[in-house]
Image (cartoon, rainbow, N blue to C red):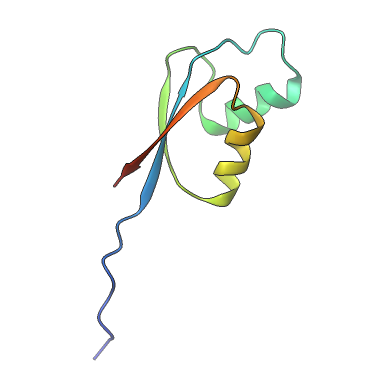
Length: 70
């Protein structure tokens, strides 16, 4: 028999763009595109993973982040 699995509730990040990307570097625009953002008010949900956290850190001044349970 397989070992009992732990309850695998994945943590998710709800990321909302709150500020325009106009006037910021091309790298920051690419990060927003990579996250699936590009317009003010657009919201995406991503798995809480170190690479996603790093992307959010690069554009923290343009987005708001909430942790949600999936």
